Image 1 (cartoon, rainbow, N blue to C red):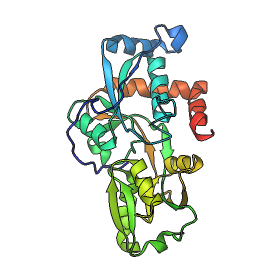
Image 2: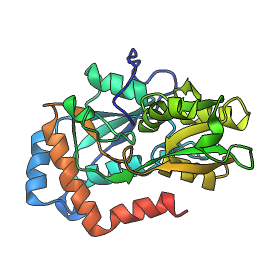
Image 3: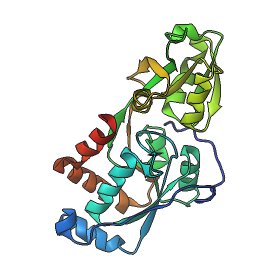
Length: 270
């Protein structure tokens, strides 16, 4: 997701946003934390981090059929917190609102499939990357649009604040299309399914997951160079450095233990 983010008033968890309390394991035998990690936990044991996230960005965060808020980001954060011994509240707000909450000091961090870009690094500190992503264009399956060249004179859908939207905006004049802007992925997909938009631009793993789940779309173009980027957890620059350190240590630990691969397989190979 890109650095261009609209400003919005942070509304906390009102309006149906979910608050999930992540509590760490109480001893190092259960969590596998190192002595250094335990020391970091002691320093921050009285703090509960407010972590803002998107509402619908499957498979990274979404509500499943059982009404549970789940996803790769959700599970990785929970695993890292358990490993490192810190508490957090996860607030699904939508991407723009999550970043606005961070910038207004209403959240300590954002984890929302947020791309680490040079522009963003001017304002935020990021953890080590936990996923490498790219962007793509998708169309209604079986429709007339088969490539970027077929978009001339048409309207496409893009999600505000995203890396995929940046790609769409960078090529719209070259291919002669206009863009309709949406706040959520599901609304964007629906606009393509109903024929109001000829295509939509999205992060590749998110779109491929949706296609596999039967969203009625198909991927016809990808950008895996200029707009490919890693995802990371973000904090405001110069703040919450202890959370960055704990996340990086915990991420390395769950990668070494195999838990990280299990999380990815749970969502990407289902």
